[in-house]
Length: 414
Image 1 (cartoon, rainbow, N blue to C red):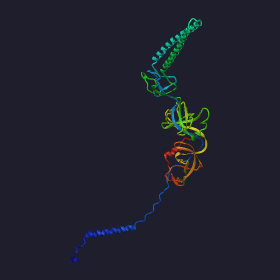
Image 2 (image 1 turned 45 degrees about the vertical axis):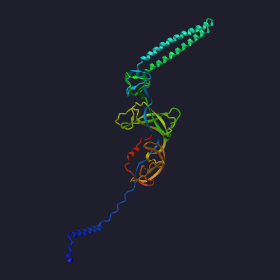
Image 3 (image 1 turned 90 degrees about the vertical axis):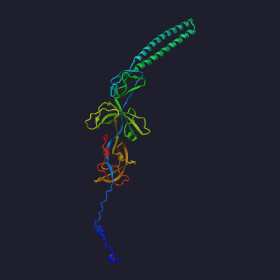
Image 4 (image 1 turned 30 degrees about the vertical axis):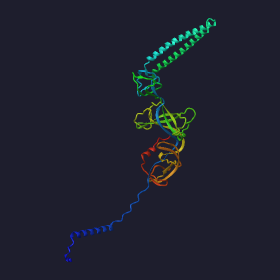
C-alpha cells in the first residue's frame, strides 16, 4: 500500500503520551526543588532509675519482729465421765467471760453419788470385819501361848486378818475412785478467761474424752517473734542470767489506725532454729483488755489487744552511733549500695559503697556507710539491666509508692 494510504494515529494515544511526559517532567521538577531534610536532635539516652534519699539517724536502734497475738493458756473442755448434762452456765457461749473456779457444766451426779454411798457402806462393813479379825487374831495368839490351841488356828486367824486389811484397802480405793468421778461431774474454769467456742446444751449426753468447748485465759497474752542472729546481737541483756525482763512496745493495726500496748520479753528459746537460724522471743502483754494507745490522732474507738491480731514488737537495741536507712532492695548481693549524687536536673553518676548491715526488715535496712551524712546521696533500688557503676542516670522525680513507704518508718529511740 502507498504511504499516502497509511492510517493516521488515533487522538487518544497522542493525548496519553503527552500526559505521561508532563507527569515525568513534574516529578523531576519537584525532586529538584524539595528542601533538604533537617537533622533531628539526638534523643536523650540517659536511663531512668528509681531511688530515694538516704536517711541518716543516730543513737539507739530499734529491733522489730512480728507475730500473732495468742493467749498464754488455751484449754479444750472435755468430759471426763459419761452422763447427761443437767447444767450449762450462761457464760459458756462464744465470747462469754468467766472467773477461775466458776462452774461451767454439770453432768448428772446422781449415779456417781450412789456409787460413792455404796462404797462407803462397803468400807464400813470391811472396817468392821477388820476390827473383828484383829480381835480374833490377838485372842488366838494368847490362847496359843497358853498351849490351849494349835498353831494352825493362829495361822488361820492371821490369814483372816490380812484378808480383812486387803479388803479395806480395796474398798477404800474404789471409794476414792468413785469420789473422783463424782467431782468430775462438775467442770469448772481453771482460770479467768473467755469462751472461744462451745457445743453443749442441757440434755446432751457426753462420753469420757468428748470435747464440748474451747476456752482461753485473757489476763495475759503473748506474741512470739523470731529474730535473726544479727538482730539479737544488738539487744543488750537478752541472754542475761536469771529472769529475762526487757520492756518492749507492741503495735497492731485495727481498722485504719495503729495502736500500741506495753509488753515485756519474758522468755528466750534455748537455741537457734536449725532451719531458719533464728531465735524465738516470747513477749508477754499484761492486762491486754486495757485499750491500746493510738500512734496518731484518730476518731476510732481504741480496742483492747485481741487474740489473732498480727502485731509488730519493737525491741530497744544498743546505741550504734550514726547509721543510714535505705530501702532493702537497694542492697546488692555483694552487700554494697549503689547511689547517685544528683545535680539540679536529678542527674548523676552511679557510685558504689560497701555497707555493714545492722538490721533489716521486709521494706528497709539500717546500715553503716562510709559516706558523709550531708552528701545528699540517693540510694538506687531499681534500674535497667546492663547499667554499671560510672554510668550517668536520671533519678525519677516523683518516686514510687514503695519508695515513699520505705522512707517513712517510725523513728528509732534517740
